[in-house]
Length: 379
Image (cartoon, rainbow, N blue to C red; front, side):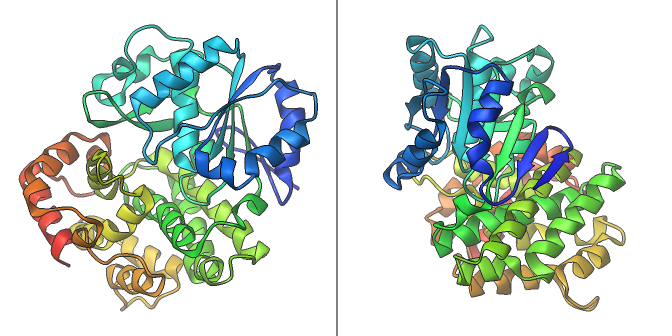
């Protein structure tokens, strides 16, 4: 069983979720609030986790995490935390439950409105020690289990980022077996989330060679070694699932270097609570558009990207992603996901203010985002 020490302590291997009781004891958590979603409850995954704990912890379950976590759902979970007199948080699920868990751990230890702690408003400096937090991913995409960020739709309708080293879970438990039941479409979408993290981290202009090396390794696992396609086509392939969970974790390690306009645009689209769009699917659709946009602003990095993808130096990474999306059954355009042309001005305004815009290799204004959204709608 591998133990990784990067931003946090990570227990990584098949069956690692059985270590939860031991991890809770290590952190002195006796009454954890488990933040998850109704889908995982219906799958029986929560019951399996609870059964493994025995009488070691008095666990309270919050299963109201929406597809994109909201400040309102955080407030509901906080109320349950206080009602059950909890002393720690466990995030179980994809990025949404883990991000919600981070926000809960912050909110129960800090006063004031959650929006005051968002990165765009200078909130990172206000974040101190949070409630003890453990994260258990059930998808291979977000990497939230090792990252310092959480994305929440605030009560004002904006999808904003909480970012602080204090938000890194004390322990991440990465068990690829928890992803074996993930259906092909979600395997593809979450896998492309991981790949977009690695790719945008590599292309970010910030200088961090170790993070770039981690990003390239994640891209290689997913694309050159074809573990993403294998996991989509052979869901029960444990080896492919292992490598994709590692690529997901590596993506979050790498994006300590910064992300880019793919995520700025995805955050803007994901703020629409009527469409409830999947973050990873949005990233997959938007990635080729931004690869085209950034092409002349990244030096030799497209050569390195092509090598990590396993395609020839004369091949186009953007076209490779387009073809891969088609092969995995993902949408080709934003219009296929229900986004209308009339939404472009508001989406562009949101994206231009998103913190990820400032680490995109090519500066991007609201006017340029309008063009990019129009392109992604029509491609």
